[in-house]
Length: 96
Image (cartoon, rainbow, N blue to C red; front, side, top):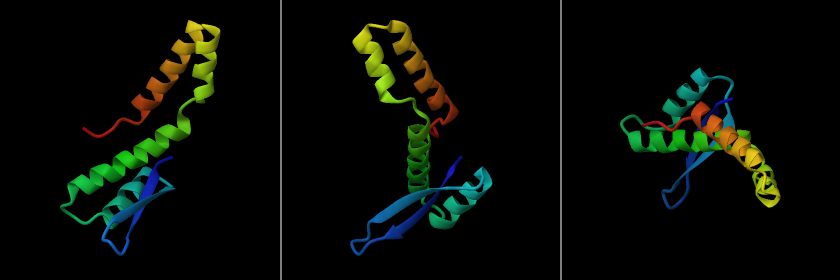
């Protein structure tokens, strides 16, 4: 599920972003355009990257699976963990 980005500006002028699950990708794009001022592409890209990081974190396999494979010397388990992580990265690529 994609995340919608909202923002607020504190008294020092620092923009804080908050990600909430969006109902759809269309809503995500609409919310992002509503929050980020037009012409500020770097903020849009950073907000998108933040959302992608949250999506990836939610789907990565537990780190314990990797460490367990290392502790046991189980290369097959290590390879499976890495493959699962790469599949998540492929599912949620960063914008170029």
